[in-house]
Length: 236
Image (tube, rainbow, N blue to C red; front, side, top):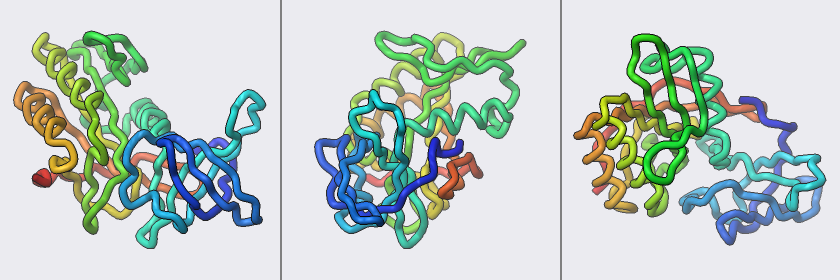
């Protein structure tokens, strides 16, 4: 997935009201950018961090700039939660996710459950329909370990319950965690941040929901799917 425009470097002044970030651009002016991330951004929202932004030429947008990447000493971190679905969609069409490569049709945003839309519905001849949800991961509180979630997410727990309900009906159900950082070698649930989500995960996987985790390759040109990451014990 290439970025829509060449990225511009800046310095984070502050992130606030969840979806706003003030940034001083390298050429001097301070701007307010859209921060497409409802989470806590733990470790990624400190004033002074180098960041990278894209700029839209759409005159209807209230904020032209979008925060895309945070630059850490260990590498780049993607914080735009609008990107994981696009990254996964590209990977699915190219057959790069081995566990799902047999499916031939990919439909995004299909209604299911009580009040949700599944990120992708995968179908293929002779295969059970597969309901696939994607979660963006960018939290790492210890070296090499990616974690989810970085804030309490009732919506995330609901998605797990709805996937489990589809599995009960005989369909395939998969939760895929996409790690938008390049410095992690494993993945765990941050159960200390949201124990309700961790409990919902345990219940869903006990009912047959599959859990996958993939890393990404990140550059200033774009973000692409990389190798699978192993699950480790949840932080309790």
